[in-house]
Image (tube, rainbow, N blue to C red; front, side):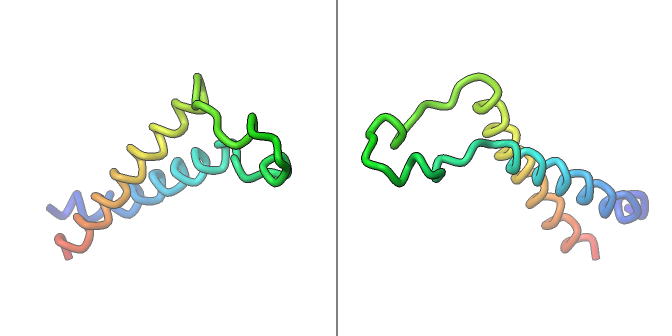
Length: 75
């Protein structure tokens, strides 16, 4: 248990950095083109690396929330 208490903050830091990077690398759908009346920019399907980043950010967010919950329980 003491090993978990010692490494948990480092795990949370790494997960926070990965989560931040994965969110910042995703394309924003609310750009200037979305303000116009063009329907083709209103919705697009995630493909390739964009889809991969989307799923990575979901998984890392769940892991981060779980590690925060574990940190509360351990203390």
